[in-house]
Length: 386
Image 1 (cartoon, rainbow, N blue to C red):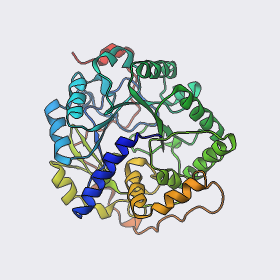
Image 2 (cartoon, rainbow, N blue to C red):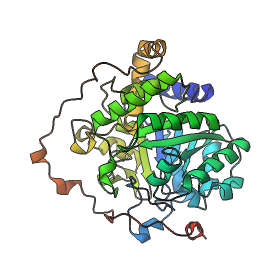
Image 3 (cartoon, rainbow, N blue to C red):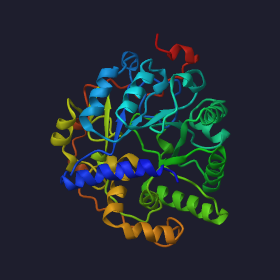
């Protein structure tokens, strides 16, 4: 089971309460970005290409707790940058545990051995460790040799200390389904709770744009992976809903639900989602929900969204579909997982006219952007807050 039963029940209870109140827009996950600074410069990352003064900024404990209380999401994902750099991260995690939030603390694990003593094991806390594949592939993905071995040792250490551990895996167009299947088999042998997998999103600021997958490429890739898993009779556990995985395999025509995963970072509440970084910010969660022009975004509504199949937009859609159509889940289970043969589900229709889009309106002047690949920091000690 990729997600513990107790956690599933608590989140399901939260959703049912929202539905009984007839709330149409509510978050399942808060992406809490306390900093953008990182000790790696991954080829597909669009989150760290900022000027130095922005990279030095940190979200305070007070601001983090205010955002968490404001939106009320039951799950808090803490990405970055590299969250373990933040000196107040142990305090932030404790504050979230006191609020009974399910925390996924994302990390590349380079600093985990040195920092793990500051975190007590809790069923509310999960270390979500970034691994995109086996040694050669992962080290290439993060543009630094030796990171795979460090991450694997950190996973073993965290498990030995009684922590919940998952793997966060992003797949690009340079992967082979059999190699991914080898990696998933390896991850299961490590003993992690599950894998969170997603096709890479083509961030505008990511340095190597040629890595990203188109929509049909993503579907065929995941069909190939799941086909290989069935052939091997592998037992993979995922930290994702069954219908989201079915969507990745091209068997569901979903529109994204951007408000199901909201983002708060050092600039404020990011519109409309975690991935689109130039659409502006709201001063409050209420303003984000009420004032964002949601109809401007989504597959077929905005060219920036057309190739996106990332969990932060579509997991919420899949969860809602699970509530509406439980028989789909039964059918998936009886079929042994996503269908890997036959026609792909049709894409949603294009409703925009690309010639009428004013691209200048999509740039957020608040955000100083460096459109080049950032250089890796040579010593991780330089990234530790004083």
